[in-house]
Image (cartoon, rainbow, N blue to C red; front, side, top):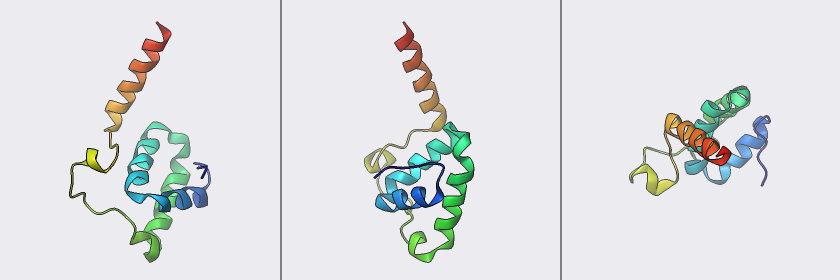
Length: 90
């Protein structure tokens, strides 16, 4: 499955596959790639508006977030990317 972050239907279809993991990835992409904010927020509104999709939304995790998939605080992820890019240039 390919994800087109500029297409609301693509985001929703992709999100349905694994909401627990894809929800946190969309949080990351929203902060890291503001050019996709409109489509990501529109997809979230669609998910919230449809009862069948809303039922798939992850509840508060019972296990630590690391056990459910990667949930990296956005600031840490950006710092890590900057470090990786700087290291690659050396």
